[in-house]
Length: 401
Image 1 (spheres, rainbow, N blue to C red):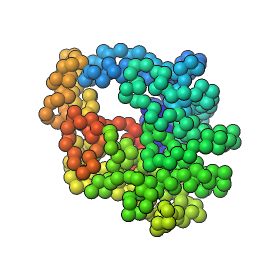
Image 2: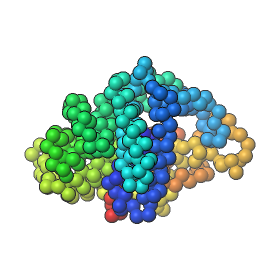
Image 3: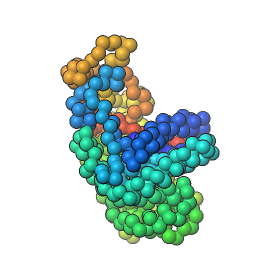
Image 4: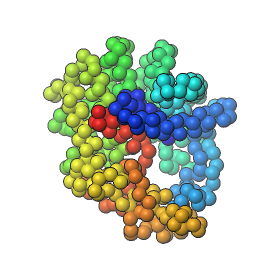
């Protein structure tokens, strides 16, 4: 949720001017998340609450939100049970949101920024991976594969933007993260931090951040198609969609597309007209824009199946998404309680379409051959997640403008 809030905030910061009247809705969505994150950070001194509910117990049930009766235990990180990754991401979310509300609600913006500073200080002072210390089965479902250095970099990058305080720049330089990678996700923030920092280098001429600009371009070289970059490490489906093995591929498509559009925007506004990938043809902001547009168009239905992967959009979209509330009858239609295992038997494995259309949800998407079974049980391809929608908001606003 913190990563979702950060990316939705970044979408508004970069592209809010292109959202017309909908920017108020976008801010409201951010505030819904940051109100929660503020409470999580301020409820108990010395603790940051990072989860509610036993992940193992929750995954054993298929229930409507109104019927949930699994344990609602809360989990926190602290000095004795550190979690620099989740704390750094929470600090990033609060700092990014403080920029969103700077003009719209100054008092709220100041509260967000003060909390971001405190949470970031906690992340630095008590370093460790949250999934090593938090219970409730978190490590089985949401482990921090990338460690926590990327979140320290990400949180500092956002606080540098929000405060202009050079101490965060010194922290960034001290981290010295040189990992070579081709992914940007809720777990690994390095590419996002590098693109964010390149803004200051490209538009403000801050040469101290030039190494991050080079790293941002190396990331882009890794996600360009092989025909454009000899250093590409990213596979594409025959229909032209970026594809990574594993779960919910559209999260990577949306996040990478956001970075492509945003770096293209920075390039277009700066003197950096092009860069190259291992002596390949020059890569321009138009190349990045075209690739991102191809990905967004694919998501919305320009693909071999003619399938929009955004539920409720277009003539054809997924009908059996892996989502409890969507797949089960509403309380109005079925007032009686539906038990944990009854949900599995009667609804998860039911052959028909979901009774509730989850409008706007973007599912995991097709396999490496552009095939999509539209199978509720196939969570890798049929599950929607908030951290796919958040960066996609920025992409859609970019192309709408």
